[in-house]
Amino acid sequence: MIVEMKHLTLLCVAREGVKALESLRDIGCVHLDLSAADSPDFASAKEELAAAERAVRIVAKAAREAGKDAPAPKGEEAERLENAKSAALVEEILKVDAVRQAAEDEAEALRQTMRAYAPFGDFDPELVKSLRAAGVPVRLAVNGERPPQGKAFFGEELPEGWTEVALPAERLSATQARLAAAEAHAAACRAALAEANARVSTIEARYPALKDQVAFAAARDVLSTQGEISWITGWVPIDSVPRLRAKAVSRGWGILLREARPDEAPPTLIRPPKLFRPVAALFKGLGIAPGYTEADVSVPFMCYFSLFFAMLVGDGGYGAIILALTAWAWRKTRPKEGMRHRPALIRSWLTLLSVFSAATVAWGILSNTWFGAGFPFADDWATVKWLADPSYNNMMLLCFTIGASHLILARVWSGISTINDRVCLSQFGWAGIVFFMYWTTCSIVGIFTTFPSWLYWEFGVSLVLVFGFTLKGSELKSRGIELGMLPLNIMSCLGDIISYVRLFAVGLASVKVAQNFNDMAVGLDLPLWIKWIPLVLILLVGHGLNFAMAGLSILVHAVRLNTLEFSNHKGISWAGYAFTPFKKH
Image 1 (tube, one colour):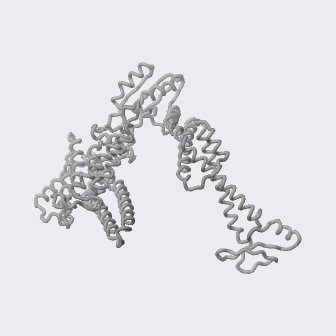
Image 2 (image 1 turned 180 degrees about the vertical axis):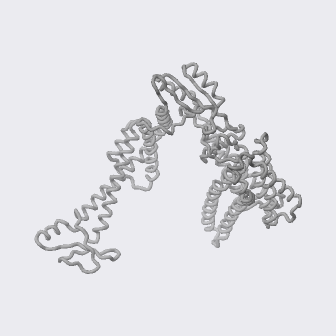
Image 3 (image 1 turned 30 degrees about the vertical axis):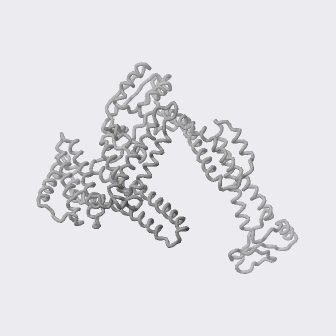
């Protein structure tokens, strides 16, 4: 369900404003709108957090690249980082990185200079200056060949095809020496940053405190004061009101609670049934939230997403890999000493991956598909035979049936939720239209060979319900155009059902790609003693690529079917924003 929110106005004496914010943060149940924060303190806190995150990224990158470079001698920068205290480590990392960047920029400029004057060799520019001072017109020029040729010309005119270049500031050998010094300096900086990776955990440990610092500075910005009174507004879940009232009594605050106005958009706090609570982590990962006045679709979202995941991956072997990795992650993230539970977000994601991978393994059992192959003893199973229909009609029927059930569920749910309003009849009418379009789709592709006459009556009644009860009489002027769009919306239903065939098409493509890589590996015309090396490489690369593409298809197709097709029929706009309480991290 979506938890009801109350709008809060909290008043306190001005001198207690900061303490009130601290107490409010300790309660951790009030959502504050901190978007208007713009004070210097807030900017400073935000910059400090950004600097810490930037320092960690710099050090991590240097550590990754450390193996590519030859060992560099320790320099001044390494000593600075080694001697820096934890609080100053971020600043020192950023300084060393700035020195590294300057050294690399200097090296690149010197390389360009060397490329420009390499055609002339290692000559002394002072000699040219002496000749010019003596009245000898010496000019340096290059031609347009590749590689270019450089020459010194005596005279005012240059031959055709030659372009004059300026005199260099120093000998080529001196430039080369400076380049070597700049590269050595940059390498020493990179080595110092890579060594600092051992201490980066001290920076990461400060993240929660820095985030709290940013949030508190923002809260102080939005705390309004006039005379002796300070106040702040926010949103509080209705089940947290008693706790807030108790704190207000003990602290001497004044609080005003009221319902949300029609023009206000409270934050969305989703509390699904306990079994489906992990799906909130998926919503957070996707960055989506239903509007406050919309429905909580967590249960159907998780159920259908699990089914879509299994069909899009399409291979029980891949599901077994995900399941094994998830089991390993469960083991690696066991609560440490002093902790009762894993962090909620980690626990939710591991639960989701367990469900999704188990569903994929189940699909592999039903379809007998394991890394693009199958077990011979399972070829005669009823589900395997049904799904392996050469005409693909059964798979398309399954996809269209899943799609129709998904969309009909959305419409019936909307009808039941508005059962006290006659508009519910229009939702039931739309459910009938979806069913009619489902039968039409199956007939178009040749799955159903007969079209019962009663379906026309069902479609006619559904049209009457939709046309007659979508709008009330008072809404005809302002929203009458919606009835004019009815034919297009009906055709859109047909397209929505057809779009579910992507479950079959993408899953089949995944299986075929796996089969082709298997055939390519097994079909190598090589002696057995050497064949196994390319065979293993082809299988690893092929299945790895296919596995990655399966993950991409889930992000594209499984998410779309839930957040677009289903949500359009349910009336979910995903225009909400998540409830984020002001609390300590």
